[in-house]
Image (tube, rainbow, N blue to C red; front, top):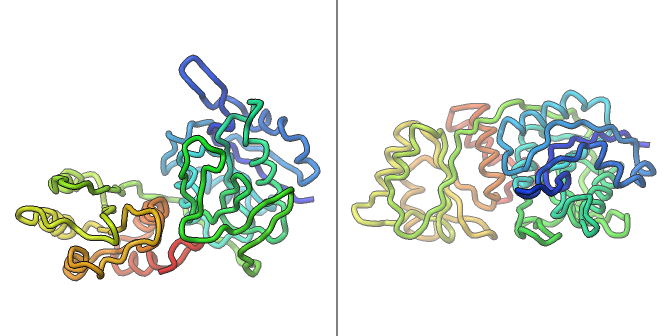
Length: 331
């Protein structure tokens, strides 16, 4: 029987009602009491790392999760992390970069309704997560939710209330779970190598979503506080040519200060391709920048946070940015 470590961090699954709304209150041990049948799948130990609404998750919490897995990696066959859904996709991407090439499964799950409610998705999600974590063929960082198994860098929350909250963006589900059976869509050779752990994330990354008529001076205001700027542009990617070409001048000032610029798209599917239109090609030809192509916003943000903690050399960052990690980039 496999040994699985449950790492609880809070979220809706652990929440109870208060006069001011749902708040995480249940401990990991209390949550396990709701799914006694899991004892037939595996042996479970529990670790209460923190008990937060996932809106309050930040890079230091990702570092703590990675550190907990590193400290217990040799003692367990897999890991299940209980997490709020609102930032789960960020956390699954961040852990994909902090823990690279793990041969063991690192599963994130949660719920849209608390586990103590009569109608809830929590019990199924949690049971499925232990089922997947206990399987011999499971490995890597994934989200298990509503029967879907999604690569950690490809998940995005697309619904705020429905049980089918997550989608795999421009990449197939790794597997689906139906009636306690795992149906694998992607079969990878079992990784026999030791994982590479990292312990730092640089949170000085800003994601700027363009809107029509935006004042380019916002980029100047960001400069003292951030080391990398992601611009979510329109369509396949480009920069507006407003009066006096202020965006171009603001970007020139940003890059001249030695700061990193990454271009991506606001469109959920199919990614960016800046060379198609002049509004994109002119900036790509003029500046040293990175293009996210088909990476999700969550993966783009967290990969930059990891990279900025590893190196400040542009060529090194560029090489690592385009090197696939957990299926994050296909272009």
